[in-house]
Amino acid sequence: MPHPTQVVALLKSQQIKHVRLYNADRGMLLALANTGIKVAISVPNEQLLGIGQSNATAANWVSQNVVAHYPSTNITTICVGSEVLTSLPNAAPILVNALRFIHSALVASNLDRQIKVSTPLPSSIILDPFPPSQAFFNHSLNRVLVPMLSFLQSTGSSFMLNVYPYYDYMQSNGVIPLDYALFKPLPANREVVDANTLLHYTNVFDAVIDAAYFAMASLNFTNIPVLVTESGWPSKGDSKEPDATLENANTYNSNLIRHVLNHTGTPKHPGIAVSTYIYELYNEDTRPGPLSEKNWGLFDANGAPIYVLHITDAGSVLANDTTNQTYCAAKDGADVKLLQAALDWACGPGKVDCSQLAQGQPCYEPDTVAEHATYAFDAYYKMNGKDPEACDFKGVAAITTSNPSHGSCVFLGSSDRNGTFLNSTAPSADSKSSNSPINRLHGNYGFSTCLMIMIAVASALVL
Image 1 (spheres, one colour):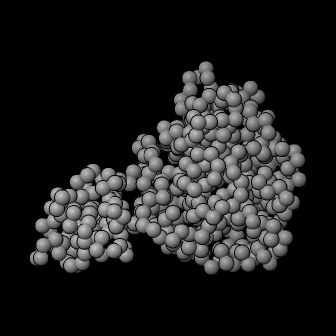
Image 2 (cartoon, rainbow, N blue to C red; image 1 turned 180 degrees about the horizontal axis):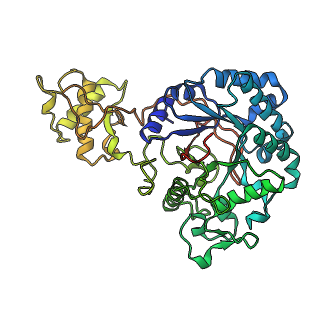
Image 3 (cartoon, helix red, strand yellow; image 1 turned 120 degrees about the vertical axis):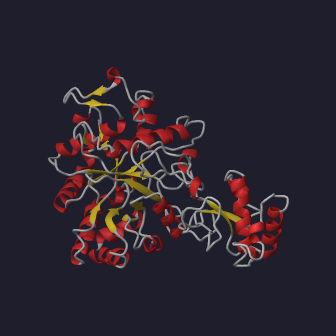
């Protein structure tokens, strides 16, 4: 997976302004410094018991992972655990203590107004979610949920919810239409009507959000906003997952973004956008489980888009087509003899015009094999329509978003000088994957940083 600096370069190139980390990885937090990107960090589940049992442990965690980085790194939110009530039920009794202890540490550092604290929960804790007006929480969880909601209300924090219409659809045995899960327009006679409120629901996402609002109201909490901490759709699946496709993933995420940015809101709260994190930034090709588990990302590990989102009518946010911003360059540290052989091939059989590399020409200086090879590699890459296979040269070249132009040596198609290598073999960040939503694998694995991006609008609550 990319180095943290490469991750941040991708975030910046895509104008992503919010990101959620599944831990508080130091490398990522340092790379995010001075970018203005709003960051949600997390207390991993494996650290929850210690923090929930000790105010001092919580204070130390905040000191190391928040105070040490703030305000250079714009930390706005702390997610305490992930789906604790279902994935780590033995920690449920101390969850609220963990929230309080983390918040108390923020108060002691005068950061409680800038940084909010909550805990992401799975939508499966909401029972009888349709009609939404009849929804309620699993009663066995109320002993935790009531003090938790009281804490959220008193601190001005959000109710964090992971919402996956993909799983709702998969588990419905045909009851939920695919179009209803994908935000596709439905004829009026197919819209689902809540008989108690007469509200019309055109998609699963809105129904789940409103079910959460009604469930909170059943416990006498009516002013806590919902923040969706995970939502998405897999782009590939095995034979038992026929609807995990590129087309459906693109349709769901594009429609979700449009739904949020258009301030659509939900039937219960029209016009109030629900800020949402998309799960996830990168595919995880080594993740265990069914094929879909590896394919929730918007980008592959090289920073190339898995699919190009159809959101042109919703503004310029996350126009994730990076093909017009890429170059081909010699890899740092590549063997000079291999580079020279590849350069000779490109300027010979490869039919690249290397006249600009001659002495006295604009691209002669600096006179190094690597610099000359980069010019030839990029020209060949452009000649072949930026086909990724045209930027390999037996492993000594890599696609990059860094413009290699320098001085009067301007590379074909150059427009800027920003970016970073997308497929260099940089060390991975030391981090772990998330605890997963319903029917997803639970546990912590030694993967690179699992990132989500947030769709946020000015009127939405952005923690």
